[in-house]
Amino acid sequence: MKVDDAPHNLEAYDTFYRTFQWKSAQKELDWFDGKLNAAYNAVDRHAHTWRKNKIALYWEDETGNEKKYTFEELSFASNKIGNILKDFGVARGDRVFLFLPRIPELFFSFLGILKIGAIAGTLFSAFQEQALLDRLGNSEAAVVMTTKELKPRIDKIRKKLPALKHIIVVDAESFITSFAHAPEELHISHMDPDDYAFMLYTSGTTGKPKGVVHSHRAILQQHMTARWVLDLKDDDTYWCTADPGWVTGIAYEILGNWSLGITSLVYAGRFDPAKWYELLAKYRVTVWYTAPTAIRMLMAADTELVKKYDLSALRHMCSVGEPLNPEAIRWAIKTFDKPFHDTWWQTETGAICIANYPSMNIKIGSMGKPIPGVTAAIVDDSGTELGPNQEGNIALSPGWPSMMHTIWKRPHKYKSYFTRHWYISGDRGMQDKDGYFWFIGRADDVIKTSGERVGPFEVESALVSHPWVIEAGVIGKPDPMRGEIIKAFVVLKNEQRKSITDKKSEEALKDELSLYVKKHLAGHAYPREVEFIDKLPKTRSGKIMRRILKAKEMGLPVGDTSTLEEY
Ligand code: WTA
Image (cartoon, rainbow, N blue to C red):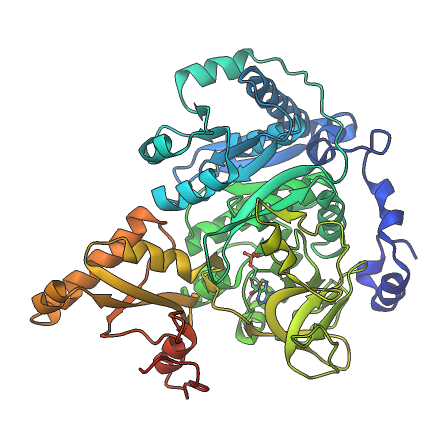
């Protein structure tokens, strides 16, 4: 039984799981004498084979613009960016951040940065000044690449970013000219597998977002899981609907998929059921990787709609980012004649760690089993393994290739992820007697809204910076469509409180606060619900008890309040 056959044969896969060693997979990549470069492995090595003229990227935007690039063209375009950055003085280890919509330049640039040994960071295009300042400030980025439309947001904070040397505007005349003239040849940096390749800011319960740093080695696991779990093969056309502002868009829209030489579709538009079905049909997408909120929105759309499209090419579908509800899988079986395969991982894990691989009998509602080379368990808070069907922390045994390397400039934060010999994910779950993992919820207050990870502290800070607000507590409120929505409990200053005379004046205040967060923090991180409250529940040491806000919101018992300040 060959490795490639294993995903389709459960018995073979289980045997394979037990015997697999990452060392044996290293030959799947191209090395330079013990060194490697993730971007070279994603693109350039294909430009030297029969895949040279194979389409790597089909790109389309909302207004119907279409482009396509072969592996050779992608290799040249990213080489050009590497050369341009070198001319700007970018050196190994420098941080270059991409504040770009999902345009082809985003993909060229990400690869170009890695090729010269610099560290790429991505910024979701919905970010506003506060979110940008936190990330660019902490990373001390030397360069930001952006567009004319997004640049004003960087200009606003530029004075507060002393390390920022250049803002490169990719749709400016000057850049277009230098791109046209830049050499297509580039010396690709030979990196130590542990050298940093990219970083992504992600949210925890407390404090500012933290910079999760990944190394070039991560591509090994992204490559193997793109094959084992996404089941990508040379004749596939693959569509990952994520944005490279988040980890899925990096690991499976750039690195894992292209390292297998797979033709990939990128759609640079917003979610729209008819458009999505149209794209699946038009490109004859065979493998589709998406997220539960999008699936639920498709379910909610007109059931006749899907019948208008020929989706017969689709052969494999996967989901990530939030709990995949059983109804969504049942709907998929009815609609597409195949289920979505759930996959579990995190920004910090760098690649899929637990999944329903193709051969598995899916237990509807379960996230599946660990992939070969990953040991997962349910452990208690002291790091002791628990038996089947017991709720605890979802934990991984450190050492998988795509494990984060550090939290940028916060080594203590990095250490805090580990208890005894386990990496503690922050998710609660259980494992059944057959080894399947089941997701229960977050152990902390991190919010997942439409699959995007939002830290309550960031939203609270944004609200408190509004002149009307004394303090704010933010929770994720369960929502049938978006998984969770952001709800803010706000204590207003006296004057504003008094200005509320009727429903209308109250609504106007709420709208103002939501809009304020949207404009200053991020377009996706604003509270869809605001409630005014006289006082927030706090511990005696002054920490906001979001758990109590959440319990009250959901009409549940508030639990242990012994550490609570009088409320
Ligand atoms: C959640 C996304 C339930 C989980 C790749 C995790 C999931 C967080 C699943 C990481 C799943 C991810 N079922 N929950 N299959 N996959 N999550 O860093 O809470 O944006 O800790 O990475 O998403 O989100 P992140």
